[in-house]
Length: 452
Image 1 (spheres, rainbow, N blue to C red):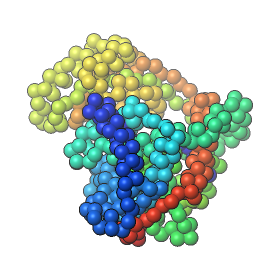
Image 2: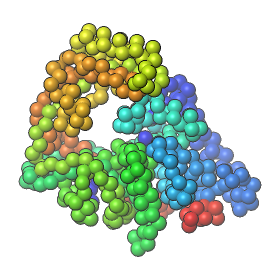
Image 3: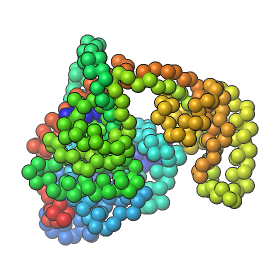
Image 4: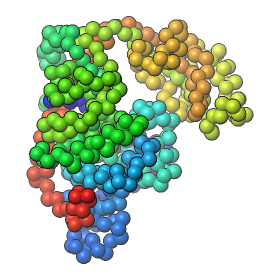
């Protein structure tokens, strides 16, 4: 089965937290030499710090599990019943054990993930979920969740990708002949169905007894169907490389998917959330955003620039504040005087860049209907009228537009597909090897969590 592949460290304080987190890992590693992992040590610890597992000499505590669970709750923005949280902790503990193995391998290879890369990852999460710049950091602080909980997860995911590329060695480069071979195969499949998909992969330790993982998957599905953002849930819980991209697989052909997945998605309405799908090695939760025939999809690619005027308080349409009225006037003036994409991006920077000045290339036909109607007839290099939302006012400008067959993959896209296939295969093999060599001790408190 073929698969394709969460950072707030932008302000000086957050950069300090990134550095502190890295130092804390080194301090913890040094301190463990003086710790005795005896049952008595468990009883000397408070409930929140109780040791659940020891992974190659490094501790996983109840506080680690609770922090990750709270991060999930805050990320989704949904209330979660205590009974659901109880079932979640078991899976989180298993996930943290695997994450610890990955982090240890990253450290063993002396791989460093710079704060700027972590910052970019968190900014990407915010953009994908239409959150203002730094909103995720502010939300974590408001809910008293340590920023390092998120940073550590991102560092593990990003460092693991570097490990996999090192493992591939020479195979980390896709050759021109390999791209041509894939292009030829795609031409032969022209007209076959393709699906624009996201997925969450949950490993199953015992394929004969997957009941616990199925119960966890059903809990995740209930949150997704209740409105939890798929990219955030995938970034938190999916255990394949697509987690870094919010579970996005891109456009997939049927012969690159597990037959069990194909059977389900062919019957699903777009944007529906599947039930758990049992595949070799685990469970998959899928969603399909769009469908097309391979090689046949005409569309319009547009590049945009944006200027965002942020409100300091949420808008009440019936009683706007004086500040909000003033910002609307400024936006109207800018709409009439900004005549280039460069000027629009510079204006956004002057306004604090609370949203991306360059939202990237978009497909006109896939925009929400209201946005599509606004942009479809907008001339290039002409600003929209002010677009008012609850958190601020936006101006948009189309820089370029191009009609093309969107179903024809570029050589770069094909190279990415081939590389993601190799990375996923290497990940499975290396994870199995690390698991075989690891010394993992599940303490009584941990066994109680796993059996809950």
